[in-house]
Image (cartoon, rainbow, N blue to C red):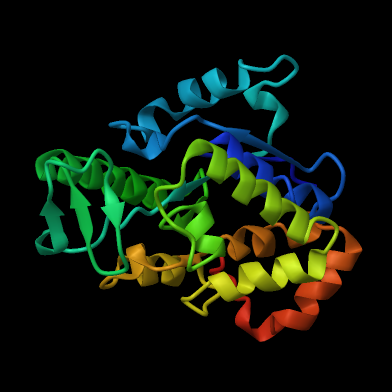
Length: 242
């Protein structure tokens, strides 16, 4: 048995990811938001313990020792595209994204953000003690290719609630959706990350979050194990999944 803490970015992400409570056996998973993309903090791996403790300290009753595994889910935000596809518009109040470009007010700051996030990703992948997963460009876009990036807070809340209602108690549909979001079409953890790094994929609607479920197959309720057995050929799940 593994008790896992999955750290996401914000409260809307937390609401959608609470669908995992329907999929996992009771007590096996907790979802907590960090409030922002913590992978934009320099040297995150060296300070990950302090970060997790701060997140858990917001609620009574949790400590790091309560969990056997700590995983992270964050937005890719186009971090791997070539800088020639990043343009500047000083009149834009927010950074905007398409499937082939990013427009921002300050290109230097955006490139610094991308560099920091990529460096943290590489250090976590190399270390291997904290599994990390992506969703692109953000959680709304990952679930719906037509979802607008720059939703207001109220619109994000409404989208998250609608999405939660769509998949609540519909485990088959939820797992099938996660599988369809894995555009790498691979159950291999490293291959799923290589997919994100290619071309414009970090701007596309995709996620490797299904690998989180595959990793925790033994912690899922029997119904969801059977769903995975039906939808994911066992031959595709290799020892290198995670």
